[in-house]
Image 1 (cartoon, rainbow, N blue to C red):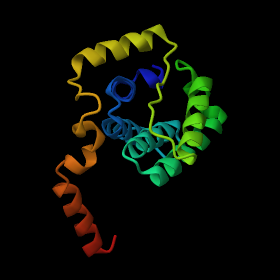
Image 2 (image 1 turned 90 degrees about the horizontal axis):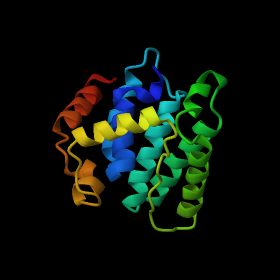
Image 3 (image 1 turned 180 degrees about the vertical axis):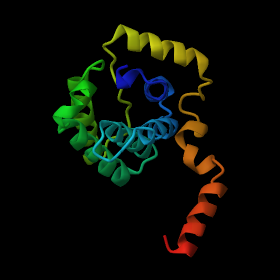
Length: 170
């Protein structure tokens, strides 16, 4: 199976291209990445995680965070190791690089947010995304629930775990 056909990558595409829920896209893609044996930061999925995070920051007006994460996404995608050539298929990879580079320039110039779409070339991937889109309950495009998602969620479990790690010195 092509890695882009994985259900969590398909879900990421729905969130990223569909209603631009970049936070949720980041979450599902991180879950996918962590499920890969021996996962590490050189894996191409981290570039998509960074891209989604950067888009989230840019839309919220955090230009510094957007610039930093989108630059990393661009670097990782534009310098993919040959063992990851497969990740250049099924999507319009060259157009994606151009769009990310354009976004980098727009952010550097202080321009307002605008979405990037990951263009799909594979009819099968398009079909998977459309089917998943019909299954997911998407939040309203541009709503506060999408734009400020990380601030509106219950983070008590995350904060508790972080405090426990601090206390144990890990």
